[in-house]
Image (cartoon, rainbow, N blue to C red; front, side, top):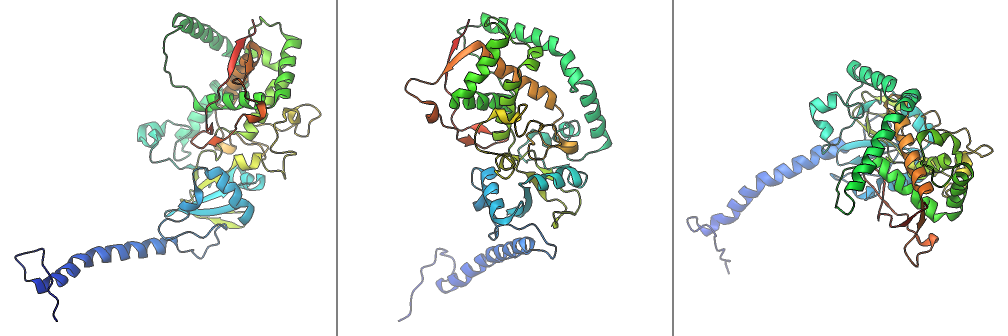
Length: 392
């Protein structure tokens, strides 16, 4: 018996409908097949030897591998594939270094070839005018960029310049305190530096989770200053334990766990592998700072390691020790490093000296969660909730 096909196009004979449907679908199918072929062709491993990594899926690449915590995922993958790995996010090749040796080759040995900046599509820095005058986000290390960097480092962020500006910052802090006092009881909303505020929050959280370190830090203050003393930048030189607490915080919770993304300006060879031109390159300083091969009792908060007599007493964050790179290294190192560290140290010192801190009723120190939320800066998943009591 013949099957009758009802046409949705009343002006066409029913027997023509299957051919018409095939005719309509043919261009769509051809487009999909061509797109799949081009993506597979682009994803195909070239003749060069790329760093090892998980096998990418067609079209998606390794997007499903990454998850919401890429720095943790990359650390786990480096344990399986080695200190230098490669992945594809869609069609974009990325390379991640997760050891001091890999960091040294990326940030020092091949600093010139890998000094380009990969600017996120959602970043304000994609604006050509802003990009040209941005030390952090300029896509290339041009002569103009080098002039800007030299001027900023020489005039603003040398240790001497930061010291000379301390009086200005103290005056502005007093003005801010008076402003806030006049607005007491009002709602205020302000934008703050995520890198500074997140480091302050992590430092206070670690001190509260490890009460013995809070006690040691408080003892250092009480031995040298009266309770009514207002901490100034010049006092930080007499607070080595407090400064070690900040260094230990930056080791465990670097503000930018993968640093800012670099872009290969040309093909280069890193650790025996080829990093092709236009590849995005990351250094997983979060993984390096927690690697037990380079840090004793790596996951514990132990500021003593950075003090005289400690195992890491000579390690600093200025880019020459590749096991500790919270601010990067090479020509792309954070230009504001001296100011950033000073701000965090002073803020944490003021909080520790000025207040007694306690957790909400019924919460023990070991119950304080330290889960992370990944972003441009590494934040706590849940904001720290504590109770301050003025000491004066």
